[in-house]
Length: 208
Length: 387
Image (cartoon, rainbow over all chains, first blue to last red; front, side, top):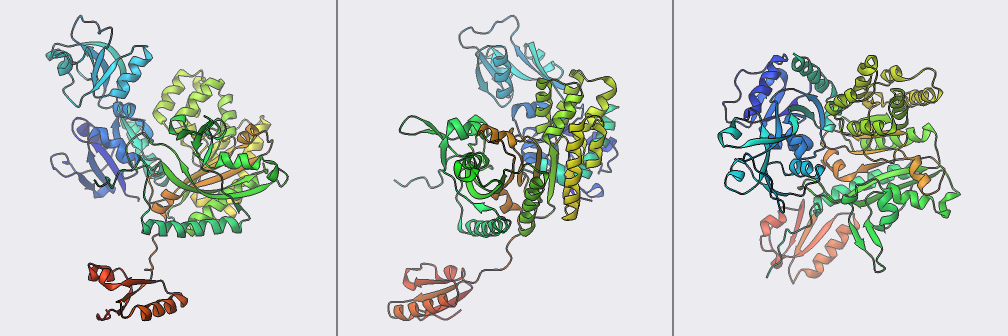
């Protein structure tokens, strides 16, 4: 049996993804997340997990240092990486939307958009024929309209709670997001059996 | 002011001596196999016209390095080798010698817009067999590429074979229009199963055939292809028959275990019109090379002939090829002013015997121990002890 290296997103998505693998029937150790290790082995299944920042999962997979990975569609939309998108896992469901202070319109001359997803944001506004200036931020995007850095933000919305707490309202929904199983194109061919088996096991679980 | 040492344009690399050495070995092994199979090596210019090669090459426009010549014409650094060779083959010189077998080992240029890890200049070696539209030509190039990988001792080699034309015909049978087929192709190129299944739901495919359509993306055996072949469609049947023949040839050459027949496999290179294939191996996270039939490209040069070929990526082969285990022997002769003449004589003698020999004036070396450690044999004519 080939060893499979799996890139997993640290943080929010990790638990859901790990649980999905366990539910799908993989024999994995109970606790993984509370250790600070970045590489964890699951010898019973010959799995090696690497724990990466969600944004970085497709990078590891593209370069083939991880055979497969679990990545949010948001990350895949932002960076066009040559990886195979094999399965919609249906977990960590959320969406990308525009938001801003209530009852405001965008500045007509140079509307400014703050976002962690510059590519997604500029594609969205281009498709609407609006010329905007994108300001890239790395977190706490909600701050930007509050203190006057931007007219709108483009960000992930899962419950809408963060927006509400900061007095922002959602304007337009851009795209639905779920986590996907992705594979390196070479691993997909060389470890085809193990990977297709994983797709089938996870597909059954995702449908439930 | 000293110049910043590590400034290099994005994607440009230095070949340090040990890489250069490995490359030389790879090059001589590869080219000798191609030449033995009857292919003639050729060299085409680094600069080509944007209007011809730039547009035909199937490389995205923003990946081309462009510049202007003194007449104001736009030039490109050649982004691939197939289109320049097609241009050469279309010239009068070779036109009358069809089928021609040409081989190359050249660097090509593709601009990188993102981070490192991908070269913008890399070498490719491969062949083009022009003027033969038979299946045997396709089989010949696949077997040739496989034998190069074998010679380089690449492990777990896999070749994935698809058929662009047959796939097109089958997609048409599902009742899809040209535009819809293009959308499907886009999802298939990146093997985006999720996008493919979502797309299927928006296409006018009959509900009872939806499952069969979704299965397209997971084929790996030639027998599986049969389920989509319409028994009454002679074109589909004759293409499938050809694939069966190819299968037999692969079998005879002991390649069956390393071949995957994936009907949904298509290349991002849009000029392929028939059989397409891609090579993979352990050690590189990226495909080692690819190829296929590109009759359509020849038409653009007003040549109604079939053509097929492959290109292998040297940078990726370097990662995948077996390391050279034997340590090269190299002698160092250290001399001083007094022993200079004697040292020259010794070096000359050793070199005549075929021994790689370095001559070095001893006082010019700053760290003698570190320096001599680089050599398998040290002859000290500087008064020091032979180590």
